Image: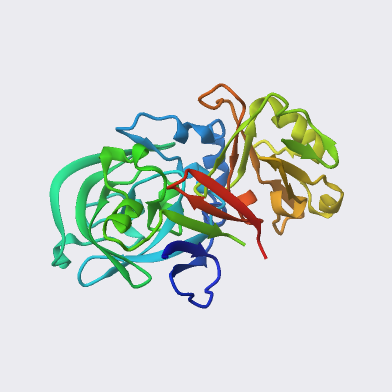
Length: 349
């Protein structure tokens, strides 16, 4: 049986497993800070709600790059014949594959790898337009078809997006070139065939199962009662932080001992991390503790940023919504079984 495995570390290949080594790079936040534009960006986008991406119409996908501010792990793929290489973010919260192209005139495209359709003998297009809505504008382009190769596995005639415009400054500072969505086809912009769909159609995967390893609810030992009437959770590799309902956010910051810094972030002294509470998620009766070393993002300033943000939006059934992003997924190995619509977790070792 062949599965799709994405892992931070290059492990020995096992029969039937496709492993994609993820590379660690500088995060968007780090790049913006070094360039002196982080403060203005955070002030401008401080009220962005990270849950908007999950409540869109199916014609236009909404994928906020603001969620990727802390992202620093990416994998390499190639597109075309001969192959052109790209670093992409593997995202369980979106469904489309897109990369910058030579059709793009935006500044953000100039410092990233760009796909040149004229250099690929296997490229074709029907010039179908697409638009992906981001927190700072619309990424637009056309759909094309070409061979996509992932760790030596070639997917022929795969549909993907060639960007023509990339909005805002955050794309300019992103260490990845494009995004490879792994979510269900229902949220694919333009109804484009997803990479997972195409791999199954070509019998490159036996089962629609993939996993990531990026290295009830309780605070400390006390039950918070925040999910006493039930909560809904989304597991998303495309969200860098842990997202909690707005109605519990302030109380959670008090438990942690964090204060607002004026830029829309919450900070606390790094020297106090060992005294902060462990946050425990209870999922289907199993406890998943998240230590403060996981949810506090350390820096060289002596103050640590809390890797937690809030959302005002409820889930579709009205229950409080939590998004388990990379802050959680760095601690737990996650397995996504699309065929049975299940997500599994195991402690990362």
